[in-house]
Amino acid sequence: MSTPTVRPDQVSDRGRDASTGGSGWDPLVVAIAAAVALVDVVFVILIGEIAHVLTVAAIVTVVGIVVMQRRRRVGLGILGVSSLLVLAAAIPFAVGHLGHPESGVDWSHTVIGLVGRLFVVALVAVAWRERPDTAARPVGVVAIGLLAVIGTVALVATAATSGDDRQEGDIELVVDATAFPERITVASGDVLFVDNTHIFRHTFTVEGTDIDVELPALQSVRIPIDLPAGSYSVFCDIPGHESMTSVLVVE
Ligand SMILES: [Cu+2]
Image (cartoon, rainbow, N blue to C red; front, side):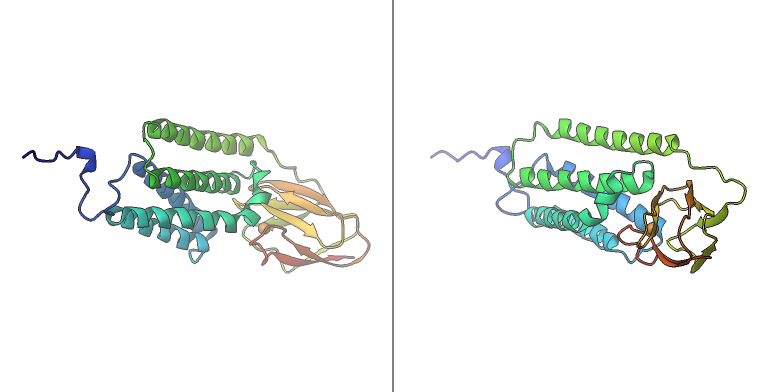
């Protein structure tokens, strides 16, 4: 009586899902998910808001990676679903940043978050179905190449952008955090010299007027205030910066 032979790829690991033995895509899923989470953690540290939805997303990513070691498909599911949810939630915040590579931190974080999560979702689908993993290495090389391209674009665009020089008579306004001064007083015809010393982009938007000016990270911009006398509401038009408001008094 012959003994049934068992091929090595039919041996299931103890502790893993009984239906699966893993695939060569798994390390790539873990590497990209971890890289995106790391970038998010650096971002929340830079903005000084640790209690941020991206911190929760990073924790969920770590949980997914840990669970994957014991319950592979459950872990893959956590990584795939959480990436999809964060992608959907991030789109309103991301759209405005995409056209501004000159604000390198915002731009590179946004692009890495979007592209990285798209990679994670696609790779989770491939790993889940245990597709042949011969392409895993080339896909990994493409992912690293994209990361290098994103970093290079952000650095070059940031370095290539030069702000305005302050001129005599300009009224200086420094933006060094996600806050404007409570009140800005100018005479009609004055020029505001807005110096954004923050590593994030902002806008100087005056409600009910044509003044809606991009303030690139670490750049200065001259803004002529050709408005009739009166009080105007000022705000930053970037989602998440709702605390950036002020009153512009034109005398
Ligand atoms: Cu802002």
